[in-house]
Length: 389
Image 1 (cartoon, rainbow, N blue to C red):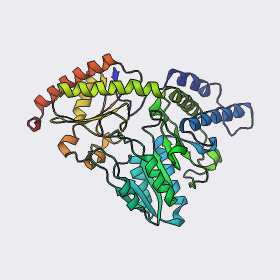
Image 2: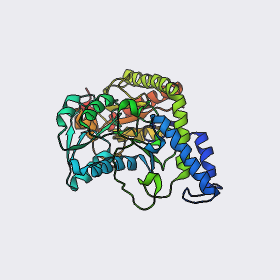
Image 3: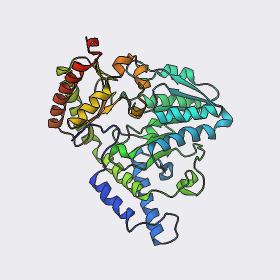
Image 4: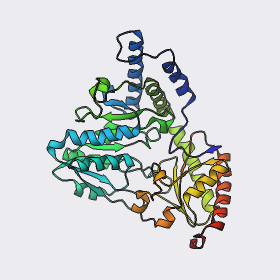
């Protein structure tokens, strides 16, 4: 199987499995226990916390909070920050192309009396800094943005946005659940207050998420009970997954340049190859380069449906993704594609491609041929094939 679905998840590295295993067997202690097993467990969690702090250049390891997933980290940041600052206002600023976890969290807050402004993006998916500035009110208590868009791959001007929010004293949350481990992140240089990561997207395990919370940034706990995670997130820790996340972050730090150079080369090869032999291909988001994630492609194909392409590719031994990165089962057109002006028929023909560190040029060449064949076959039986121009 040729796996080009790395935007959705990645296979944990061999050393991640190796170092997680003892924490699922003989090292089964709880960090809350006052015995040797408990001490070992606390030390392991602290070591992983230190590794994640280095990944984002946090000023203190206590700024790293472990959750059960990137989705929980997003929920905690958005809901927890808004609730903690409610006495100052009830307004949130975000964009119209955010991750469903951000959208859902804000929708929940709106039921609690909050309001939100969703700023627009241009035809590449880039939000406008002037519109962001104009959308901030005296009662704004949170700005929620993303570093890189899940469906479009565009890298946003976060540092510039942080300058605006910093001048107004408004907390800034950044969703980095797609970009973490692929783009260098320096929370101090960027000037963000809250940031979410998903280790399973950079060769760590599932079952663990990471929330960076700048010291002195107020956040309300959402899960109550014990005293874990600096009293911000109750519940016995998933020690094995936390250890795995720590190892994955260490590898990411040491391999940033290597991963970038490898995947950008294959990204360009894949895009050029498909454009050369398949008609009616539209790239969603910017061209490969400094404004696009190095391992991400989003393609809309005229005259076919993306779900059919993905299923047919899977039968031919190539894994890609159809539609939106996190809402495929809903069968809805991703809001991000509507936001950049894609018509419904073309948006339905969208596939997402995630190149990995183990992907090869040979696999890319084979994939291009298979995609061309699959698309031709689907067009020959498609009721909308005549739409192709």
